[in-house]
Image 1 (cartoon, helix red, strand yellow):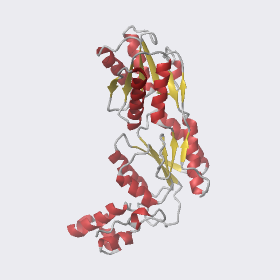
Image 2: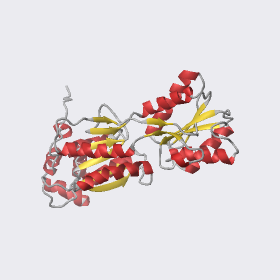
Image 3: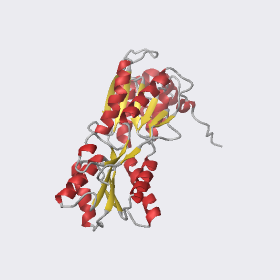
Image 4: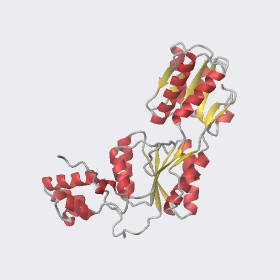
Length: 343
């Protein structure tokens, strides 16, 4: 019978797997593991394969800080976000960084895009610098990323989403519930038809699907969709509305956009086509960015308090450092619909 008991090297959270343990798993010396990592061409292919299998099995990350003591603190916090130019993530990081800097920590920042394998590579690179904690965006990660993070034994905070099973702790809100509430708002405002413009982000897709399911259940009317694989931009927002109008989207419809950038682009396209907002086309954004109240007409949107989110994430890590027994695993900061003139 095959022993399916969990591997203690994968499940423990304490000090992390050592190079010597990798050697024992691979049946070689610690010196051979070190040689395989630094000059793999000097190790036989068979030995190299055994070492690589041991590393893959445990999530071991080589220490790039030569000579660092195991007990030393780097005073570094690794932060991984999909886009460094997106004001949503930038404002969250600003609030997060202010608190961490005041406590003597520096932030190492990487842009991961929307691909899990790219995030996994960034996690490996950051862990090799031995940060004291890590901030991740979202709650879905590759199996390799999870192995590395569990093996690292450092505090991890996942932001911009919530789950009952975080890696360590999470700070965010329910994207599914945000989509449902937006649909309730649209139905309550009397819009008989609806459409969505959505970026290729899993959280945006979650909101889109929740909005469409709720709206269709309440009205019996199919929700049209314009989807993009890329991050949201004003230009793609214009293109999204153009696509929907070319498909004969009925006048008087409401459009739920996955970001305020899309919504702003839709406003520009509506104006260019001589449409009146919200009489001909109503538009709902997401994020309540700084420009949302200043568009013409002012943008109705879903507000997330990004400052509170960033501050809560920072305080959650500080509580982890202090080993506070009362630290919550899940911090749901909620959201609200801000109604202005566009819907």
